[in-house]
Length: 211
Image 1 (cartoon, helix red, strand yellow):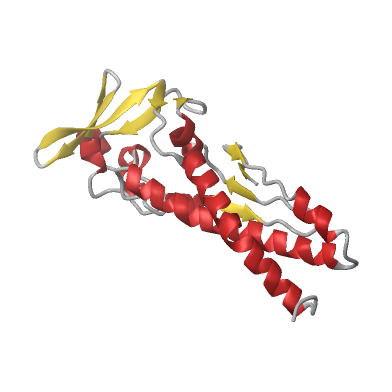
Image 2 (cartoon, rainbow, N blue to C red):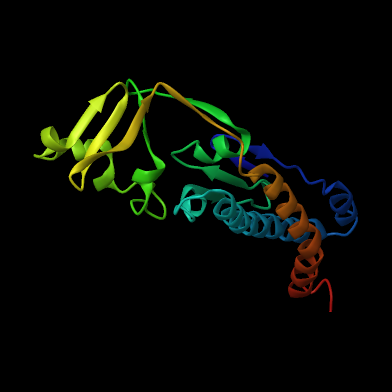
């Protein structure tokens, strides 16, 4: 199982002993694979919820549901016992997990909002509100009077004065501050250990291998 897209981690679970035992009984191997696939999928969905809690606990901003909105689960099947948790359209989660240097790509500089500017201007899933971003401010008819850019700093008129809203940087360093890999490993392993046997028994009873 993996957090993929940009791959953050990979966790392999050894089912070889269970599969070897299942092959000894005609028809049982197929039911075992169903149980494995169901347990793997349920484990990844449970881990997704746990990761969202860890994010909200460690990241001091209003984007508490950002991981839930960003990650997508590619489910395992009995033919392919591999489930993926994919980070879509972003590398933010990986950066917070591993640490990274984030460089400007399609623009000359990264526009970094200050903590004061971010107050009351954040959405739950998509960061700074569109109306509070630099592009939106510069598009206003009043921009010439209310926005000042000097020495890599952007000031915005507020209450009769100017407040520092953004800093322009060629790159920023994101420290590893959210233990996503560790949480994923712990959550998936715990879920599989607790639920695989129950799922297997339930499926075997439904298939009349067990009474």
